[in-house]
Length: 120
Image 1 (cartoon, rainbow, N blue to C red):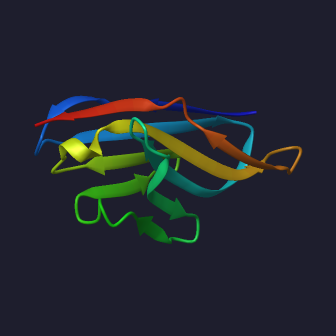
Image 2: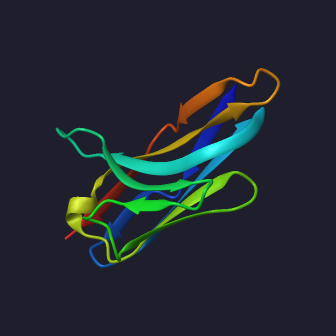
Protein backbone atom coordinates (compact mmCIF):
# COMPACT_ATOMS: atom_id res chain seq x y z
CA UNK A 1 0.00 0.00 0.00
CA UNK A 2 1.16 3.46 -0.90
CA UNK A 3 -0.34 6.46 0.86
CA UNK A 4 -0.21 10.09 -0.18
CA UNK A 5 -0.75 12.95 2.25
CA UNK A 6 -1.30 16.43 0.89
CA UNK A 7 -0.99 19.76 2.66
CA UNK A 8 -0.70 23.45 1.94
CA UNK A 9 -4.02 24.50 0.46
CA UNK A 10 -5.98 27.48 1.66
CA UNK A 11 -7.48 30.86 0.85
CA UNK A 12 -5.35 33.51 -0.79
CA UNK A 13 -5.95 36.79 -2.60
CA UNK A 14 -5.30 37.10 -6.31
CA UNK A 15 -1.61 37.66 -6.95
CA UNK A 16 -0.63 35.70 -3.87
CA UNK A 17 1.28 32.46 -3.49
CA UNK A 18 0.76 29.02 -1.99
CA UNK A 19 2.92 25.92 -1.77
CA UNK A 20 1.38 22.47 -1.86
CA UNK A 21 3.14 19.38 -0.58
CA UNK A 22 2.43 15.70 -1.12
CA UNK A 23 4.34 13.04 0.79
CA UNK A 24 4.29 9.45 -0.44
CA UNK A 25 4.84 6.66 2.06
CA UNK A 26 4.57 2.92 2.23
CA UNK A 27 6.37 0.13 0.50
CA UNK A 28 7.77 2.04 -2.44
CA UNK A 29 10.50 0.45 -4.54
CA UNK A 30 10.65 3.19 -7.12
CA UNK A 31 8.68 6.15 -8.41
CA UNK A 32 8.15 6.74 -12.11
CA UNK A 33 6.24 9.99 -11.96
CA UNK A 34 4.75 12.54 -9.61
CA UNK A 35 2.23 15.18 -10.52
CA UNK A 36 -0.53 17.56 -9.64
CA UNK A 37 -4.05 17.74 -11.03
CA UNK A 38 -6.98 19.96 -10.15
CA UNK A 39 -10.73 19.92 -10.39
CA UNK A 40 -12.89 23.01 -10.26
CA UNK A 41 -16.62 22.83 -9.51
CA UNK A 42 -18.54 21.53 -12.50
CA UNK A 43 -15.39 20.77 -14.46
CA UNK A 44 -13.34 17.70 -15.19
CA UNK A 45 -10.08 16.99 -13.44
CA UNK A 46 -7.19 18.47 -15.40
CA UNK A 47 -3.42 18.15 -15.40
CA UNK A 48 -1.51 20.95 -13.73
CA UNK A 49 2.09 19.71 -13.71
CA UNK A 50 3.97 16.43 -13.87
CA UNK A 51 7.54 15.35 -13.25
CA UNK A 52 9.05 12.03 -14.23
CA UNK A 53 12.01 10.16 -12.80
CA UNK A 54 13.78 10.79 -16.07
CA UNK A 55 13.65 14.52 -15.50
CA UNK A 56 10.81 15.39 -17.85
CA UNK A 57 8.54 18.18 -16.58
CA UNK A 58 5.25 19.20 -18.11
CA UNK A 59 2.92 22.09 -17.27
CA UNK A 60 -0.55 23.03 -18.37
CA UNK A 61 -0.43 26.12 -20.55
CA UNK A 62 -2.59 27.99 -18.05
CA UNK A 63 0.03 27.72 -15.29
CA UNK A 64 3.29 28.01 -17.22
CA UNK A 65 5.52 30.69 -15.76
CA UNK A 66 3.50 30.84 -12.54
CA UNK A 67 3.66 27.32 -11.06
CA UNK A 68 6.72 25.20 -10.37
CA UNK A 69 6.77 21.48 -9.60
CA UNK A 70 9.66 20.02 -7.65
CA UNK A 71 10.44 16.97 -5.56
CA UNK A 72 12.91 15.84 -2.96
CA UNK A 73 14.71 12.60 -2.28
CA UNK A 74 12.17 11.59 0.35
CA UNK A 75 9.29 10.95 -2.06
CA UNK A 76 7.69 14.33 -1.57
CA UNK A 77 6.45 16.45 -4.43
CA UNK A 78 5.75 20.16 -4.19
CA UNK A 79 3.80 22.67 -6.23
CA UNK A 80 4.83 26.28 -5.80
CA UNK A 81 2.02 28.49 -7.06
CA UNK A 82 2.72 32.16 -7.64
CA UNK A 83 0.65 34.96 -9.15
CA UNK A 84 -2.50 33.06 -8.34
CA UNK A 85 -5.69 33.92 -10.18
CA UNK A 86 -9.34 33.32 -9.24
CA UNK A 87 -9.52 30.75 -12.05
CA UNK A 88 -6.92 28.67 -10.20
CA UNK A 89 -9.56 27.93 -7.57
CA UNK A 90 -10.02 24.16 -7.40
CA UNK A 91 -9.34 21.05 -5.39
CA UNK A 92 -5.77 20.01 -6.09
CA UNK A 93 -4.80 16.36 -6.13
CA UNK A 94 -1.36 14.81 -6.23
CA UNK A 95 -0.69 11.63 -8.16
CA UNK A 96 2.24 9.26 -7.86
CA UNK A 97 2.94 6.12 -9.85
CA UNK A 98 5.70 3.59 -9.47
CA UNK A 99 6.52 0.10 -8.26
CA UNK A 100 5.65 -1.42 -4.90
CA UNK A 101 8.53 -3.01 -3.04
CA UNK A 102 8.22 -6.71 -2.40
CA UNK A 103 5.41 -7.37 -4.87
CA UNK A 104 7.04 -5.44 -7.74
CA UNK A 105 3.58 -4.44 -8.90
CA UNK A 106 2.76 -1.07 -10.36
CA UNK A 107 0.87 1.42 -8.24
CA UNK A 108 -0.95 4.61 -9.18
CA UNK A 109 -2.07 6.52 -6.11
CA UNK A 110 -3.99 9.74 -5.53
CA UNK A 111 -3.94 12.12 -2.63
CA UNK A 112 -7.08 13.13 -0.75
CA UNK A 113 -7.18 16.55 -2.35
CA UNK A 114 -6.59 20.00 -0.90
CA UNK A 115 -8.75 23.05 -1.55
CA UNK A 116 -7.17 26.14 -3.07
CA UNK A 117 -9.36 29.23 -3.18
CA UNK A 118 -8.21 32.46 -4.81
CA UNK A 119 -10.30 35.53 -4.11
CA UNK A 120 -10.46 38.49 -6.48
